[in-house]
Structure formats: structure tokens, C-alpha cells
Image 1 (cartoon, rainbow, N blue to C red):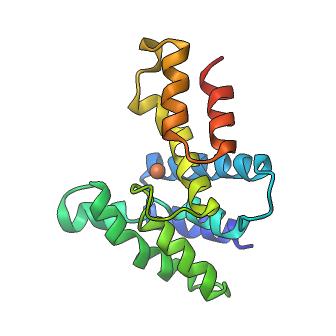
Image 2: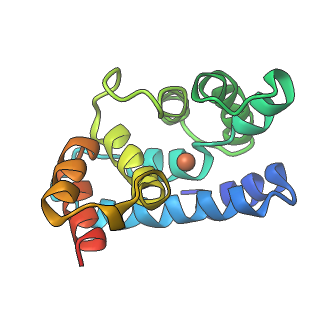
Length: 166
Ligand SMILES: [Fe+2]
């Protein structure tokens, strides 16, 4: 696993954009928590960790080329940059391919239904939920409803409830 190395590449790529570096690191640490909560062996840790570190890597080129960080541009611009970074290490093509597929769809749930995708998606939402939803304006039942609808994996729902309901 080249976790440290890929984190360094991500940091170099984002440069002084500390906000995005911190976001990627937070999502990676949630991804690790979800991996440890996930009971079955039907996931690939390497795929999930690399996807977490690099999931928003397309944002820089999206802003440069289209002057927009809209999800569709990030999804177009992310995979080639991720592939370029992953190719610097002896990582299997099958892993690189899946990471790129996940990054290219990480704002579009439904197309990919692997547990690797679900865990990355949920890790991102564990970081983003408080920014996107005003949880203080919602009662317990409403928060449960939001969580059950939004998160894709059982581990994600469980961790979100632990995190946002107490
Ligand atoms: Fe993200």
C-alpha cells in the first residue's frame, strides 16, 4: 500500500490549498474507520484509500479550465490526474482502473454499486454533512431520515448516527 506516498503527491498537487488537503485527509481517515467497521471481506482497502486521498483531485483543473468546481467537471478532470499520480508507483492496473472509476463518479451515486464505491461516498459525506445540512434545525427523526437516505453502506449509516445524533 502506498498511502503515505500518494498523500504526499496529493499535497504537492494541491500546493498551498490547505483546505482541500485537510478535506482529503479527513475523508481518508473516515474511510479507514468505515473499513474497520465493514464486516465482510468484499472490499479492497487499497482501492478505497487511494480513492479517498484523490477523490477531489479534479477540482483544480475544473476551476482552471471551466472556472467551475461543479461536480460534473470534477468528475471529468479527476481520473486523468489520479491515474498520472498512481502510475508513479508499482500499483496494479486493476486497482488504478477502479480508483479512477470511483473518482469519476463520486458525486453520482447509483452508477457504481461496489462496496468500495459506497465506502468512499459515505466517507465524503461524513465530512460534508454538517456543511450541507443545518442539523441543528432538525429533530432526531429528521436526522435519522436524512442519514438513512444519504449514506449507502451499513457502516456509513451506523457511524453517521453515532456522530450526528449525540
Ligand atoms: Fe470530497
